[in-house]
Amino acid sequence: MKDKEIERLIKLEEKRQNGVINLIASENYVSRDVLMALGSVFTNKYSEGYPGKRYYGGNEIVDKVENLAKERALKLFGLSKNKWSVNVQPYSGSPANLAIYLALVPIGQKIMGMSLSMGGHLTHGHKVSATGKLWKWIHFGVSKKTELLDYYEIRRIARCEKPKMIVAGFTAYPRVIDFKKLRKICDEVGAIFMVDMSHFAGLVAGGAYPSPFPHADVVMTTTHKTLCGPRAAIIFSRKIKLHASSFMLHDLIDRAVFPGLQGGPHINQIAAIAVCLKEAATPAFKKYAKQVVKNAKVLAKELQKKGWRIVSGGTDSHLFLVDTWARGISGKTAQELLEAEKIIVNKNTIPFDTRSPFDPSGIRIGTAAVTTQGMKEKDMIKIAQKIDKILKSHGGH
Image (spheres, rainbow, N blue to C red):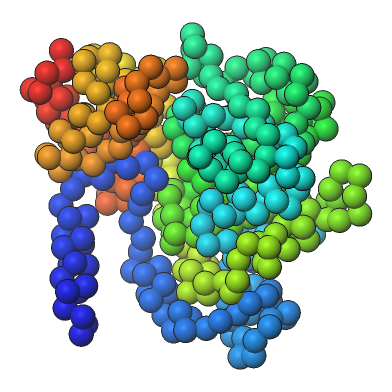
């Protein structure tokens, strides 16, 4: 590489990644094949539009790449092309969510979703996000007693507010979502049911987490978390008409992605998506997904044994929250103490947190990245011991 300064920084980051225990729930390690696709000559190509309907010439091969990615996406999740459509062009999860809202819910109308402080995502209507500024959001959370979703309360709120859409999904909720119950609530109030499965898509693909597809109208996922792919996103939508409209959901979503929000797609990203989807369809990936959940359960249980309070009492997925403040250590302090010892986590609010999001009461832990590195249950026991020792030696009582 001629640019030695950037080459040096790349090598330093590679060294850093190889030298830490990465417990960031939204990070993972991609294969060499994914990296090769990302760094391929598709980076050079501009391809505004969709396969067969481009605004530029020279896209014959590009069309084949995009169509292949779409075919693999449907196949991975067992979806019929007669019933589902898929868009692989979103640059990432946040613009993908924005595109869905713009396509299906008039600006200013009501959308219902999980609040950020309770485990939802920034683009599920937080006030600092464009999504929170353009629509009226009705937020739900978890039960104060159980720290689990309260479907009776969600139903009560939905019946009162009559939202146009209900969004399910999380960045910091460790349990399985009951998609069937939420579908019934959506049907009762006439809402579109959207699932943001960015965090657990790989677990769904591997059979380690329930699939939202039998119940949802629209499903969005990023590809860089449990799917082990590039930083990008995919939108799936049923081939049905929008309520009281002659327009199909997927047509509206496609228009919202391009030309509504984006210009030319990143074909190198789409090629890398195709690669990761093929990898996720293998028996080895199914084994991996199940190991991710096993690791999370063991790590949470071991920390619990050592006296650390685990939010909701455990996990059904790849992530969980630790209430460090219950033992006198703020989330920010815990993150810094662990990073100094090469364990990477992120500070995180816990349900009903009384502290600032910049220095909250807990940390979020995920096991996707360490499982990709080949770690298993015995390694989780050692990691729990190390976390416990580090935090207790710095004041955790």
